[in-house]
Image (cartoon, rainbow, N blue to C red; front, side, top):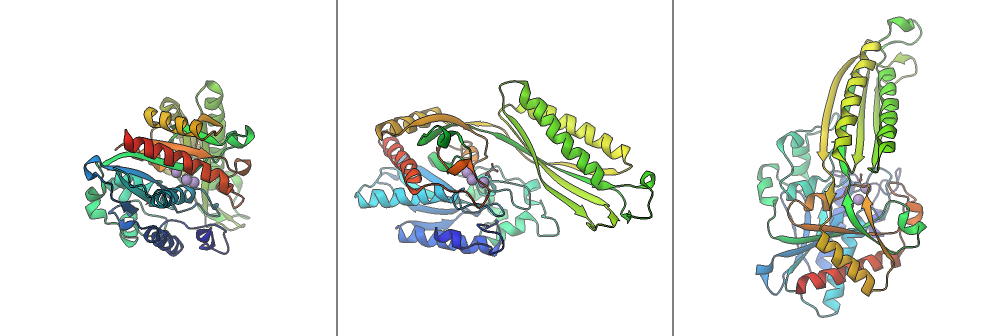
Length: 400
Ligand code: HGY
Ligand code: MN
Ligand code: MN
Ligand code: MN
């Protein structure tokens, strides 16, 4: 809860990556790591890593983690509940006088939320060799390239290779569900079966700024009308694809900027970012083809130039490790908790960690399924139950 106080007073629970607020929050997390007896380091991808050596270093690492950054006007549990879980598990093991055979790490991944760069999971991409030069060259509108921001928060874009891990045997992430299934069915635990694939696309329309009073409609080059038709198109195509079969498909335009943005100027430039998610990559291909074709047609009709249609990121759907899922189900059962398997419509660091090790997640209920909003809330006992499941699974893993 202390972390929730480190926020933008104008926008509650905001600690956007790469900002002073994020760094202040991260310093608090690092202090908690040290207080818990962890050795602490920042890797070259900007991840904060707490570590406690196991009795047999040859066995490698079991890692638990999530992220401490937030979306704008976010909540108090998205991400940080998973980092706090790792800390509590370290404390519980220490209080029980238990030292694992495996080395245990608690990880606060850098920039899990898509920052102004439109790229999510920067830290876990870096830890898994999935952060490439094109991504590092992304520039936030009017700001510094991602590579410079990464250097500013303790990473090193020129030594990212050192962040790639091969010694992690298993990764477990606790996260609030950010959906309504668990609460509506009075369930305690969600064992995550898969994590949705996410494609993010930037589209820019360049028209001509003009006087809103003296420019006849047929002479305008209105970038916002082209963008608005594209936003409607995104929703229409997503509904068609989502209705089609059993696979999940959603698409959102969460960013739309208008320039010069004045009531009496015909908009000259518009930038929008599409976030498309599905459990079936073939649907994304069809979505992108349709939006590409029809947004170009809208621009032509309106005598506007579609000056950019760029994939910012493209992560495939990921199946969580089946053996870890079994261990989590067994732990929930041993603890007498009510559970279900369910897919994740949210993206997570666990998806990237699956590229280097066995990776799985536990969801805990959050009030009314609300997330990415100040109303986000999870009961302490609910998070504690999830942490107990992960602790039990970690101890079973350690013995296996
Ligand atoms: O956007 C997401 O799915 C996650 O909350 N970062
Ligand atoms: Mn989030
Ligand atoms: Mn999250
Ligand atoms: Mn996550």
